[in-house]
Image 1: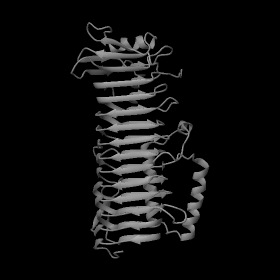
Image 2: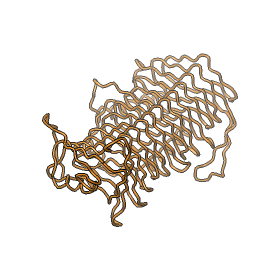
Image 3: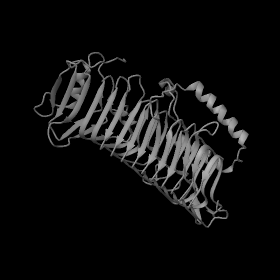
Image 4: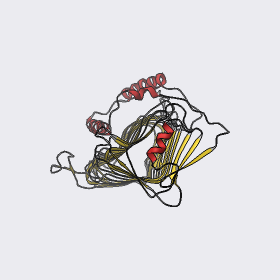
Amino acid sequence: MQRKFSLDASSVNVLKTVGVNGDFATIRQAFDSVNAGAFSNVLVLSLLDSQYNEPPLFLSPSETAPTSVILKPAGVFIPTITINQSTPADTIGIFFENIRQIILLNLHLETQNALWNSALCVSEGVSVVRLDTISLNGGTAITGIEAEITEDNSALIFRACKIYNVKSGISVRGWPAFTLLHSEINHNEGAGIFLEMGFGRVRIIGNTLIGNDAADAGIVGSVYSPFCVIDSNTISNYQVSGIAMEEIDGSSFVSKNMFHKKSSNGKQRLEQLKTNIANSFSKKLPTRNERLQHFKSRKKHLQKRTQKNSAASSLFAIRNNTITFLIGEAGISALSVYESEVDISHNSITNQYGADVGIYGGSLEEVPSVAIEQNFIRNVANGIFVDIIYTSEDVGSGTVNINSNNIESGNNGLYFPDVICRHASMSMNTVRAVTEKTRERRSPTQQNTFTGDIGIFTQMEGVLEADSNSIEGFASAF
């Protein structure tokens, strides 16, 4: 049953204790009381004990419900909540729905079962979820935390959390805002963070993502957002890619209903990423007329589907990240970005066996500016490769800055075959050709050797400034 909530100014906190000599002996008893409609307004459940052994926990009131439920320790300690499977049919460890706001503070969660679909799941009727200083041992769950799309979603805010012993870390679909700060995700399959989100804001800042040489990617997502910042993360030991994002759209509104269709998973997106990159390297460069025709067609498509939001400042930024991966396609990829400022700067990307490309951009269209600067890239076949950058239809506005990157690559250094802008700067880049050997992901023993082809390549409309570049070892420098 899906319901609407409103906060009343006269709301008061109700404090109940849980544990030995508490108001409730177990968390399950407390949740059962909430589900039966015993509380309204704001409920604080204060945990008295250091250890709790519980069956799967479901907080799902059908009628009267608190506006907020806060679960936290009674003192300066971190309680351990162990969730045990009651029957083979139990596939979710902790489940929340029909509570406007959920807040979990200073807890350690253990889900003891290898068959969980998700260790913690947020479903309909929940507007805000805040997790602060939460550690989650997922018991090899398929997903550590899953947040499903509903009409009531508002914001997910996770800070100083640790998720481990899971196949994939966090899966978010449809929420308008997601914040992950100073947290750690350690997993063995799929994606550390998988996003498929509507119009809103994304902040992923200061986190550590570890793929254990087995998982596919750190961050995978399709996000229609005026503000998407991925900053100062350490992303290590992934098979395919560090960050793979697409459909970043700065001024469009996409109905949440579109996400009710069956969604592709992280592995499918990464397979498509691999295909897109391969096609980019093999295709014939378009003529100017073909490029402009494509741009006009794309512009009409955007106008049909978008609803302008001129008040918002649109930004897509991937900055200050440290990325290492094993047998990969791309360290960072931005497949499709529309109408947002693009800033991919100050990232360090290294690959063990030699990836196809360090930073890959598909279509960056109607973007007011592009900055790809001060990135450090090693052991890749191609340093930075962007298919299309269109800052305006008639080259009347927009800037592109590709400056101060330090790249060692086996094939091409900087490759920008299709740029339309008012002014472009490609200066102070250090590009060095080295002999690289790459290994196919599915055939690690098969190696392909590349030698330097082109240091810097661009085909563009607009004014180009290219000064003080250091290019070494390529058959063609510029």
